[in-house]
Length: 462
Image (cartoon, rainbow, N blue to C red; front, side, top):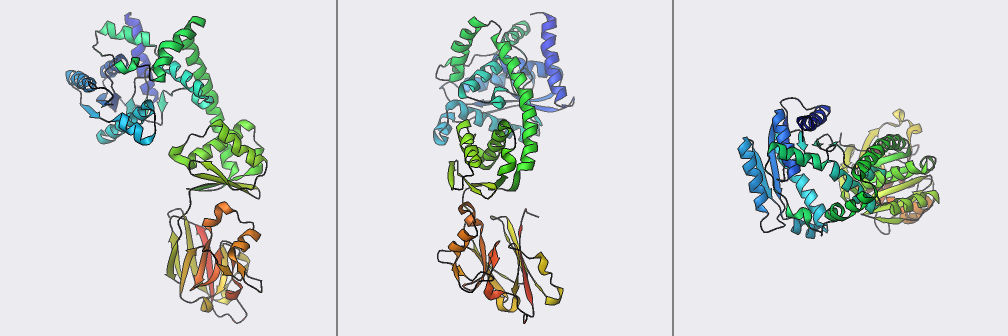
């Protein structure tokens, strides 16, 4: 390998770091396995003069796995660099969490690197992935049935923290650099273990594909780059659609405008739903094509049944909306003095009760989320609670009492949102079913001297 080729690798790394916004004196964590990729990356970065901290995680998958950590620590010491080496039981973690060894190792590795970066105050973490790793990743994701997001492969810069400075460099070039520089590195035996799918793709599938196209790695990298730019565009269009389609959003609930959603191209519909489902489910995703299509089909068919989606999610159509919910809200029961304010953090709502004079009362502002009650009839201490079996009340304007369950059905209040309904009561007598209707028994009359103005509002922590 000539000097120019070595300089090209250094220039490539320098460009990636400059595009990421690294200053000349930036602190950088370098993920090091001891293999040729991370060793070359460390050598290049060390030559560029950044403040480096070497980090190695022992996955404890072999009896001699600690040898890798000692090798990395010795190399860091030789270079005069600080080093963190820790051990995690990947096999036990995989068993506990129901993950593959590869996925468990990846999660623990990134968590470790984040911890090191946070501890030393480093803004970026450098990873040793290269162009051949990218080709393998594209194939692996294709085998899993990924869409354009997955097939776009790994990003050179991800989440403003993780950098892959060698992602445009081939493995053969990296190995030649190491030989030219006389670098010491070690081969990880697990990289040849056929139990890992990536190893079989590297050792069996890619060589077979190379017999059909000798430039298969370059083709896969180019395809990934093309799909990544197209995916970025679709991502922007999806965000615009989300801003239009979402009509209600809180930490455990998203309500979509069904008509607006269905007006978009089918590709945007799918992306909107996948984004919403993944956001609600958090770590339980990702949601595959079949599940996204199932939900889209229910929305298109105007389905009103309560559906269980998995990952703790449920869905139900209601009017022109489709509601998606995570989990169940805990029952509440608490008292407060009026006038006063009660914040129910888990429900994300705030109830305010003001006492006003009938002379300064604007009845035009009233509705289900803001009602007027006779303050003297209500008393000075009220209870706010969740629904209970057998609850009955007299809806405003009705002569007789009605089961609250029947009232909700008549009001077309969806089952999926029943745990959002609260009642404000004096003792056992319900005065207000929030946010729907007040009780006729607590209505404001011509003889009312003081009015309790009750308001239910979203609470966002302010």
